[in-house]
View 1: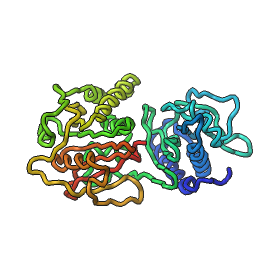
View 2: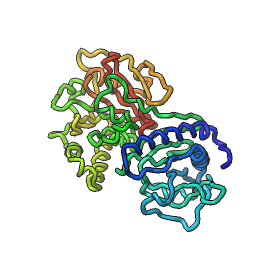
View 3: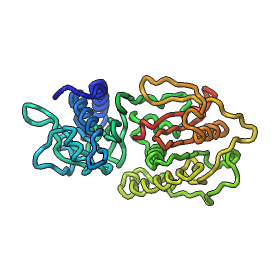
View 4: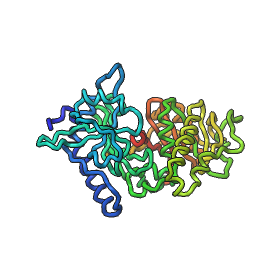
Length: 382
């Protein structure tokens, strides 16, 4: 394989190889199921390099969106196989991109069987094994290295985010904070073994869907059975829901067997998208900890007697990033300021805030620090 012309590809290749080697070894000790092959650093570098340059091309005026999966055709379930394999070059990827733009479709990549061992595109697949290396082109110059966590639809874990010359290696220990809220832990512990059993937590899919609609929005999560949150909401609430709407809550109460079925997964996705869509309405949507919808379009106001928030702790689950203390307006404006104020006044609540530019922040109270903690998590949601 020729040397990479995209320096970040080479810089991160060994880290990605080590990550998969460690996780595949651990999985093989505990799970007899079929697992994906380990990607080597040379292949990782070549895939990232080709995808990066492909992302900068335009095919009929459109930037390509591509998902590449590193696996042999024998592990692809029911693949769509090409009669002849194609070289993995930016121009080939750009031409094929329209055929695999829809979510869940991957171009299969594997070394050629001849002496060259050059990577070849053998076809497309929807089925990939657990811990399969996937590289997704999000937009020009923005790539995400991820893997398939389970056979459930949409269960991926992001490992590295590359944007131009910026490389973010995600920190698996992001949930290791001593006072991380229970609802938030499954989202931040994205790569740990415990995160494989997150079917009782819908915050991650809600966050992904909120970010996907691109309009920006806020979602407040308040305790079950309490109306104390109303002290921080301006009255009257434009769209108060009575009784609370329980479609998502009802789905979340189903047993694990039913949750593994395709019908439940489709209904769950529809319910999540419907709730996330409400956050696009001006104001905030409110749900309780059981995912029952209480209101949307709500305006946040400072609670009587509550102190004006001036500082928040900011962290990002990225290796090497240290926490900062900033004014909440520095995170994105009035939407972020009002969400931080709500959590400051309602310390047993969470606030999820999506920006139109793709940034995503979750606010939670930190008893250890006595401040609102702003978790920047957009790198987990791409």
